[in-house]
Image (cartoon, rainbow, N blue to C red; front, side, top):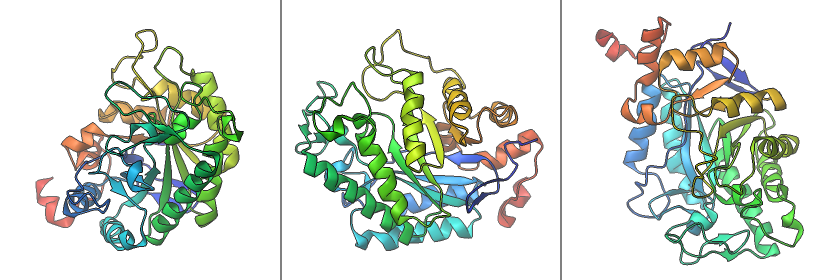
Length: 339
């Protein structure tokens, strides 16, 4: 029987446990050049020291105007590769695996002079009105994703994640709520499928591609879980190997669509996706209780468990969870006296 601290393998990615640190923006690029700094190095490496099986670097954008803010990460230049490689190497030295989330904020790019999107629809009054990408610009955007993935592979990451959730660019394309185009990209999953295929063209065949997806939308007019499953199927067919299941982020939450925020509130989405697609899934949503996380793996609701805010509070969450569950975990030798 699988547990939170049993091993997991997909393609050539071998994880020592099922604990995932999901992408969480740090907004800490003080030079505003998209390049990680000392904060990012400490942030990610400390979670490796803390026993996390898989660390996913926060939303890393394919162009400067694709960032949520100018303090966010990017991977649009080869000059940025060595700084990411330093983080990757240190995470590996401390026994964990590391992926990176490649993305574009689209209409949610707060500091872009003029954000871009599938259609010129503002996210809210607090955001700028975006400009609709031309057909040619959409194709150029696919190329930007491809080149960012190429750089991530060169930096030594163990897996790639594409951000297709939370109302960012890929999500904006595959949602009827935000995609009102009349060209070939009116086909909702076309852009996302092209990005998936472009990413796969740069990745070793034995490297897994993860996609984060909003299984359902929380606005009244948004797509529902059954439609989210169809969207995910299109991405699986294009080459996605594993899904990271979240929800919402595309607009104001409707009271009729609000699932709440209790522990495990997104688990039904992960379970449904796993059953429908027969593909490994990462579950999210207030899963920092070790016994709950362990039960979700044991009950086959999910394959991997992402602990976000809980791991912001505690870099050593995995070690503490293993001790709470009575499971064995390697504690760094200098820290063994503390356990």
